[in-house]
Amino acid sequence: MKSMECATSAPTYSARNSHKPINFYCHAPEAKSVQLAGDFNQWTPVAMQQRPDGWWYLPLEVTHGHHQYRFLVDGRPALDPHATGTGQDDANEAVSIIAVS
Image (cartoon, rainbow, N blue to C red; front, side, top):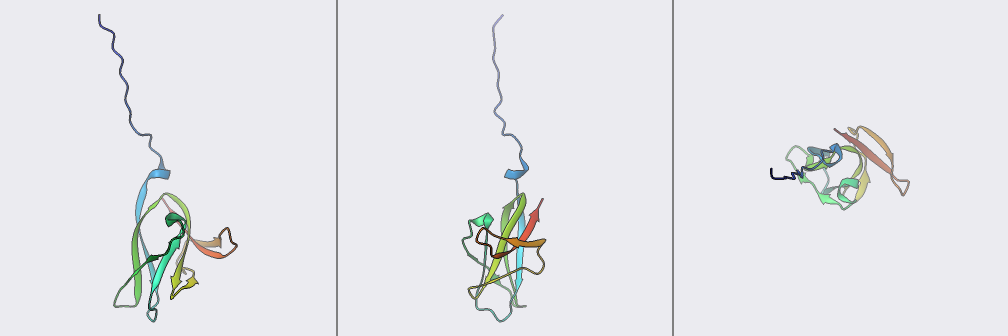
């Protein structure tokens, strides 16, 4: 009888590695620019798109967990009044918090 050895190499499931589409919205009808920065993009500001109704939006794929972020409205930090909560970042500055599951 022949000897056989079998193995599978399936990735282990982890919610930490799963991504979920999240739409971020900021109401700033008078703003010239709105950006989003957070721990999910290494705090690199990303330009949001303006809609005719004064809302700015940005769809992003975000990993499972709690994330810190803030809007930059014409370069000034702004919290999200619709966030899951608020907290402080490593520099002790106010941030919005979102829970992604």
